[in-house]
Length: 171
Image (tube, rainbow, N blue to C red; front, side, top):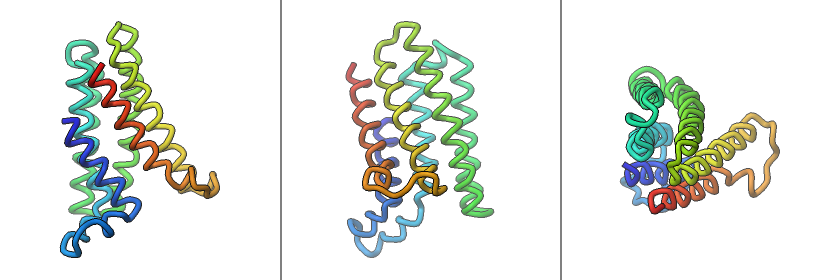
């Protein structure tokens, strides 16, 4: 599930920054318009990975169910995006990301306190992901001004998150 999450996150980052058009042949350039779907599908794989990696069903059953709820939120976002309104689907994804990341941060910190050491990299990865997403939203809202660092927080956050999750898997 980590591989599927990493693939979707990579596609999200490439399509969000507009790079997908540059690297794909013209016949596949339409994929660049599905940024929201890459985010939603990737988040579902991420929540499955989280439940397996942190063993939430065994260690923290309420968080297992909260992650299942998050998967339902992202699934409803996909349905809304494809059938009702792409903007509504995008807004559901944005709200679901905030919910899911907060749940993952709390869950991984609780499991870390129980002694599961790989959770420290997991906790750091999602804390930094939440920080980069927050900076991105503040920039999008005009609260933070343009800079090279701010304009690339999504890419920097994604790469950092992937590296830390690899360390967590290897630990």
